[in-house]
Amino acid sequence: MDSEEEYMSGMSTDAEGMQEYSGDEMSAAEESHKYPAAPDFEDDFDEPDPDFGISSKDIGKTKQPAHIVSFKVLQPSDIQHQQDAMINEVNMILDMRKEDAAIMLRYFRWNKERLLEDYMDRPDKVLEAAGLSSNTAALPKLEAVPGFMCDICCEDEDGMQTFALRCGHRYCVDCYRQYLTQKIKGEGEAARIQCPADGCGRILDSRSLDLLVTPELTGRYRELLNRTYVEDKDIFKWCPAPDCPNVVECGLKKKDLEKIVPSVECLCGYRFCFGCPIADHQPAPCELVKRWLKKCADDSETANWISANTKECPKCCSTIEKNGGCNHMTCRKCKYEFCWMCMGLWSEHGTSWYNCNRYEEKSGSEARDAQAKSRTSLERYLHYYNRYANHEQSARLDKDIAQKTEKKMIQLQTTSGMSWIEVQYLHSASQALQTCRQTLKWTYAFAFYLARNNLTEIFEDNQKDLEMAVENLSEMFEKPIGELSDPKLKVDIMDKTSYCNKRRVILLEDTAENLAKSKWTFNADLVAPPVVNTRR
Image (cartoon, rainbow, N blue to C red):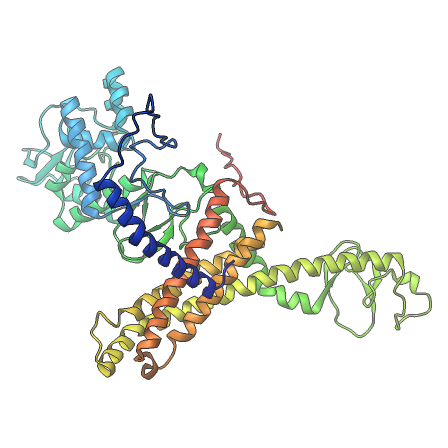
């Protein structure tokens, strides 16, 4: 790939070309527009202008980059507005109370079309299944019933407040409140709270709950209903950032995760993958990331020690540690006897019991080949893992530096006389370092599973260019305040920041385009295994 100098010089050349066109050629075009050429009357007909297959609808459209997916961030008020709009629509079509329409929609997991279709075919069965069967048309209310005794607490005090849903099962208000508190606070239930009566499937509606519980518990109830709404829809995902209440909406299908990495960004600034619950891992697909993290958890802790201190049994490939000076090894698992030095069969050593000078035995040669392949595989993994871990550590350090960036910006503002807007370039550089480090980290997981071909070489060139750009920017960013006040260094940092961001986009775009076209060849199958249902 192009170096930084070639890239910047190319940008300059393009700019010069644009300036040249905007000068003489634009003037010539304007002159021809003012004074059109005289028509040629010798031509019998005018040929239609070629449109090159471009329609008027295509003019002004820009192609969306391959590494970007369309998404929308919803705040809690937006989520509530969506629910209210759907409830109002069902309420108008079916002419039922809004509370009942909400219960119906939750039962059908907010699939309005299926609700309407099933209700039109068999309304009574749908109402019963949704928990809306009733024995009375009267709206539930608090009332004192003379001579009433609560079946839960057996209290029969005169004037005791009682409550019953439309199913008719009546209990005292205190027992109802305790029941609802346990359901909402203890069990986290809201959408399908049933009548306390044994065997009754009547669902508690929001209007009834407002009559019974405190405003604090009502607030928790609303939160749980919103959570149920989000979790019932595949196009919604909660932002994983701590204390963030926002939801991201993305129409990506699960089957598309093999061909795209759906990175999204919440309003709080947190970037994550819509396909899995971890932070942004472009350019690596979700299934590859899952395999890589599992491999790291299994292998990385002991891989270095194993590589330096153990060998595999030539017969059963069990890992063996030498715990004595003798080269005569006996595998505890398969009882195979071999030489620690040459890995050959011990019986072929004759009288050379402790001084191995044999190298050409067939058994030893095969064992050494197997050992070499095993070590090569381990060394290859460590090559990618060490660089992955290095960028992960560097990203954490950059994040610590970013937390001190504001303090550095204030100091620079004080010492150099710059305005707050003029020192924002440090914040931009800090953000670019964190984002590019995150991308570089996952490029090594991606490269570990890639098969070698021409595309791999292009990918590694892009990876190298981004890595060099990031290291150059990181070195500049960590300079002392006295040097950062130099206007020339400020321009250099701004240029390096822009260059890092552009190199990152180039790498991601190339990777995403080839992933979408299934051009990458991987060493592992990235299709997730199907989930087997074992229930009978």
